Image 1 (cartoon, one colour):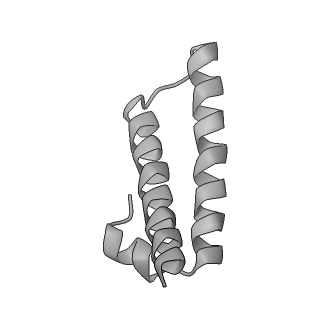
Image 2 (cartoon, one colour; image 1 turned 120 degrees about the vertical axis):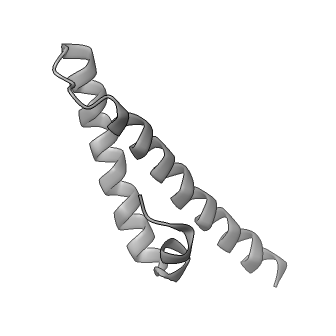
Length: 68
């Protein structure tokens, strides 16, 4: 996944797009797991972690904007 420096350099729209992409992938991976077709089980963890990283950066920005 992206490192935090790259994520913090992205604009809000880029972060939203990346988050939407990861959420779609997460849905597809859950569907594959339920149907027994999931081969790379580690990808679920990587995607979940990426979503958390993006949400953290977005939350930091919201807190900073509220503070200012």
